[in-house]
Length: 362
Length: 264
Image 1 (cartoon, one colour):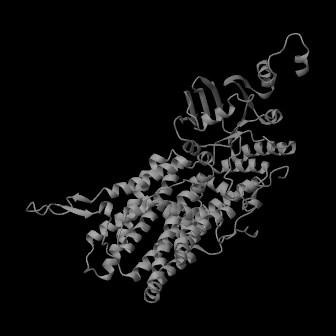
Image 2: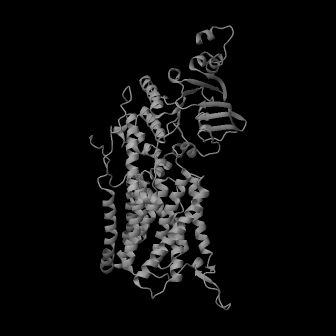
Image 3: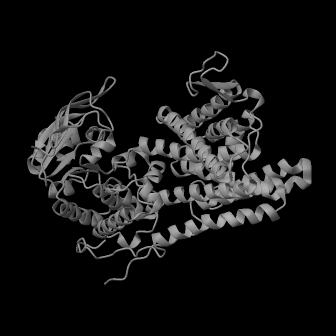
């Protein structure tokens, strides 16, 4: 540092604007969403159903891992209950869609209803994110991990012990006792919910990857914006974050709500894709799967986590050829990976990074 | 009305009184020191003022507004910013991002505007970035804006922490041992920087420091703490000659032997 502070001139150094203007990237994303439609049609006709299935699961897992990364990697709140959010979204969307679905729906109605229940599932999961967030905020590290683990297990237990829900006064008052004024929503209890209708598959690729784009772009833009730095600040040092005016409680709840929302949407997508839901499929082992994706991709790196979600979904499928050795090899690969790159595939870096430059002096 | 006022503040941890009947006022543009031996309660006084601890008794006001019970981030937004004795930067984030975090409360746009990158978001970002770069420039850190904060040299980290605190547009700046671990040359530069900051940002500065030369050269008033008790208040010269202060730092004078003479 010079012996006297440099002159305070407003244009001493300033940053050059980003190379890609906002309206260009917005248009590009819109074009991408539009192009997904013909791509979905083409894939549906030409792709082997097995690979199509893998593609859909990859999409769902990318949404799950990216949203968990917002909570675990970026905000630094170690959550072991992400499958719980997924379960809430899956059951919320699946139960409502099954109850109201009619085979006579036109394509547009079906698509609208599908989008509606996915959003509903997301909102329910976001609400449970709020519920988990508030009591567990005082906890950190291992304690938070255990509390979220408990949340995930509670969700599974509640579903396993609920056969149906009656929602009163959702039908007009009846003339006879034989038609009561309530709707009965089938939950299925421990034996699971079966026979969830599925929209046409061409739609399915479109909706899945549409949500992949929406969730990834939302989280990316949020994290790499001035407002999003607050999430990172909470991870880096909570005491310092509070000292510079950040409401750390609010940031953590926000991370749980947003992460929960997208996990709920992913759950809804998986419900209608599989057409059957098994509550035990959302236990903590499922949460661990997503934690592994986040850690392996690099906690905090959005592109790294996406990469890990793709690889870790595709790899076990490829290993099917070696049958009983499959999980052994898979586990060994994870161990080796953690030994040679403990910080994950990309660490905290992203796959690409636009370096900001100093603007030339005018 | 004083900018920052602590009246009869007492903080007890069980049987231990960390701070007893502490009184302090700071006016706009003042530079006041807080000294005392290790464990005297200096950082505790800062922690009480910034809402990290809730005092057992007493009142604290920022520009007349009582702040006891408010969480630290609300107190910061009322105009109290601080640095930490053991540097607390966001180490994994870039130098620019560290300062940008301080600007968060200046943002006028919401999450939707951030995600859709609407014009309001973009103008906010431009505004914050240029302010952050200006601030970094003042501290001689602008050309290293993209480096991770943890990779900076020690003295630079201390200065970045002050820059980050100033980003929150405080009325009062609390500096906890800003010169700790600096070499004599860096200390001289820091002394100049602190008085420049007070004038340029029009903040009142409350300073904990062990380096007496620094304290004596820039502070208008000094409070001396020992075991949580205020043992002296006043201009640096008079405090320095106060026998209680000398006793707190050097121990009680011994009667017959030559040791006391050697220390004096």
